[in-house]
Length: 91
Image (tube, rainbow, N blue to C red; front, side, top):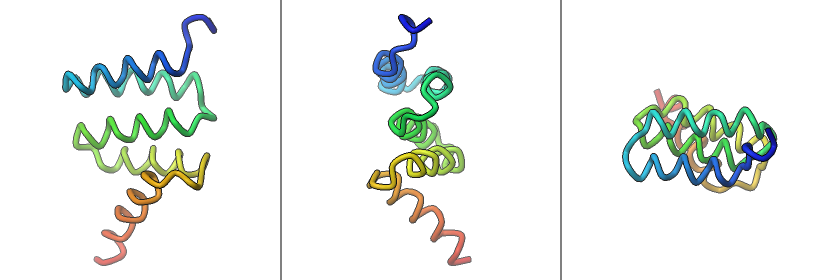
C-alpha cells in the first residue's frame, strides 16, 4: 500500500476538496492521511484547518493540539490552542 499512501498526495487531495468547499470529503481524506502517517505534525495541522473551515472548532483544537504535541514550534497550532484555551479560562 505504500505506493498509494504518499502523505503529500493525500494532503493535496484534501486541500483540493477544501478549495471546492467540500469540507466533509476533505476531512475524510485528511483523516485517512493522519491514520497512515500518525507521526506527521503536518497531517494533523491540515486536518485541523479542514475542521476549522467546516466550522468545527473543537475538532480543530484537538488536531492542532496533536500537531503541537508532535512539533512544539508549530506557530499556527500554538496560536489556535492558546486562543481556544483562553476562551474557556475567561468564563
